[in-house]
Image (cartoon, rainbow, N blue to C red; front, side):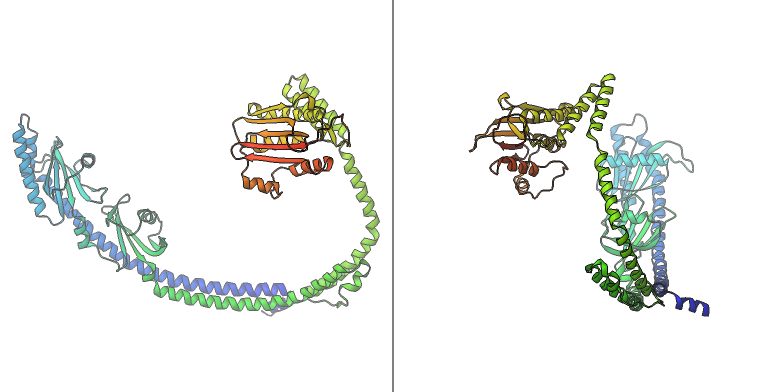
Length: 591
């Protein structure tokens, strides 16, 4: 123990704080978890035992009563009068009148039996000719339900089958076979359907787990009881597939304690759900108490941690202030302005940091004096090397080699793309010329369109409508190609149908004359609000090339502020970019 105490005493502040806070958190969390787990498990187990006893008692009473009702179905099945009347219906040559008499006898017998049973709603017998004879309550039954029950009875081969209808009615169904003494020949005399008063059975045998509890009985696919559950059916289905037989769950934003029991007889599932607040007041109080204790311990740990951390942060803050003073000082006085006197026998991490920082400043000053000139020479050499890395003639020769290889292999499209790319590359590299003829600018556009047509094929519908007399007009270099690129990017790429793009040159009708060069597309267009933002330069576009503002600025710098670009756009119609420049004729020249 003394050795451990010595190690802890010699440890740094960070390790002391880390060990102390970690121990406090582990102890507090362990106490909280153990206490909460014990109380919760104990209470949950008690509630489960109580509610499971209630559910088992209810299930036993209900299923005992239903087994008694199965004996009723057997008594009806083997009733001598019913057997004789049903057998008479199958006699060959029996007249309709004779059959009507026998059916009347069957209905009277069924009415007599149903009237003597407390839980029977009605008894129905359907003969092989699909005539339904009803005793008890006279409520009818849909034909499709009759057909479904007859099929169920036939598949059971004479055994009793319990069935829950879509209206949550409870039926006992079985096939009536001819019966004589103790023998059962295979003759089918009809189908017996007994509908029970489910509410009376449940009222007599269901035991409540509390005033607020909800009992739900289901056969796995349909809810048997109650007819109108207070909990949504989809929530009930989620509870039935849980692996736990009891626990807490949330339904409709409310917490419930659920208990689930599955009967061994009919295989029905009994689910009891009790609101959490009505059951767990005591345990909630205990949980709150333990939580307060946990928070108190946590606050103590935080207070100790803050005290320890301040012993670290205060010297560091002083160090930061001195570093900021150094940031504002000159390089010749770094050491003098740094920290002043630092003890040589440093003990804590912060004191080690201060001494190391002072030594670092001394080293920095030495490195600056020794390497400043040498670094300037290295930077200049690296810049020259980078400038010499890209040789345009090397790129041209490489593209010519690719073009030659494509032609040898008869790859026409590749050859066209390489030639167009080479032309675009030569045109885009600055040669000191800011103005070129419209003819030269259109050659750049044609090269760019050649590449894009290979990419988009029939989707790109591009045409030039430029009179020959304007081909010698001067225009700033790389003006039309960026606008065409924008049209393809924003009008053609987002759609799958063809896109029409036109470049039209006409004399301007506006004051001042000159040329009006239009780049039109029938793309999605722009809303007035977006167009206003774009004209104000408040829209960040997706492109990385030459933008509209760059083109307009070059036009104004070249020809004057009265010339430039105008944008017209209408949603779902298209966009038109107007380029207004003066009509100046001449060869390629730099104005």
